[in-house]
Length: 186
Picture 1 (cartoon, rainbow, N blue to C red):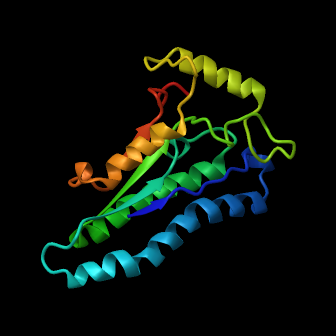
Picture 2 (picture 1 turned 45 degrees about the vertical axis):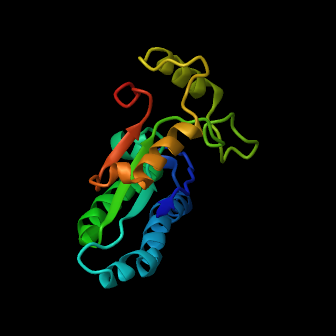
């Protein structure tokens, strides 16, 4: 199994984004996913050729974002990278299905992590208080209203466990949105 979970943001509106901010986010999120899958081919794809007609099942799990599904203001670089990960997911699913390798993507909404916490002093991580309040208000209006607000890392880990297990043995090329019913809200 391979899980591509690295991700970073550098949120800036389009007309103020620098090429450095664009390249950094694309390199970590999109190029990093590509590089990992390509490197894993030696351990995943190549041995399957020698295993005969029914090679051992293998799974690639990529972490995308709802920003890659619907876009998000101030995140053109992040949205492009995460949408690209969804494209990589579907392409690998088609290319490597004959080797019994599944490729799926998880597209989390707002999950309580360093990226969604209060902003850091350098402003490179976190969400401004006004935006966090708006997100929390939107979450309170969904059918999956939780006292603690947005999702938790365990919510994503549970979906990753499903994708890594044989329970998803006939599922590949899918992007699973895990956002507590928020995908159409924002």
